Structure formats: C-alpha cells, structure tokens
Image (cartoon, rainbow, N blue to C red; front, side, top):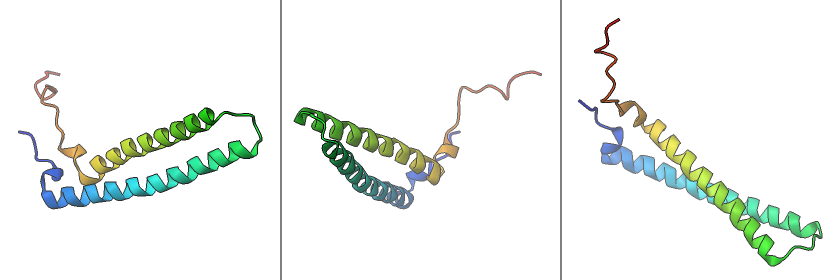
Length: 99
C-alpha cells in the first residue's frame, strides 16, 4: 500500500506552498539586482554593444536564475514536507529475491 503524502493535508500543503512562494519572491528580488548589476557592468566597460546584446544578456541571466530557483525550490518543498519519504517503488521485488 502506498503511504499518504504529507502534502495531502491541506494545512501542511498551504504552509509548504506559502514558503515556496516566499522563496520565489526573494529570488526574484535577488535576480533583478544581479541582472541590473550585470547590465551596469557591461555599460561601464564602454564596449560597443548593441541594445539587442543587453536585452539578450538580461533575459538570459534572469531566466537562468529564476529557473534554477524554481527547480531548487521544488526540491526543498518536496524534501522539507516529507513527500520524498512517502514515495514507494511498487516494482521493487527485492523482498521476493532469493539469496
């Protein structure tokens, strides 16, 4: 039988998702600061760059950081709630093997 996930409880799930959203808001602020610092650095170096380079750099750095934050946040959510422990392998037949 598959054990229930702690995320099936609505109170625990609401707390976990609120923590995830708080993490994402913090990472959005950090990402905006990093993107701004990168763009300022590129502007100060007096390179003859087109506006398209600045746009691509800003989007690339921003999307990469937010994607990383979202995926790591989901790992923290899954691990922190005990959801990982509730997953079982129904195809595992190690109990039926003969030594």
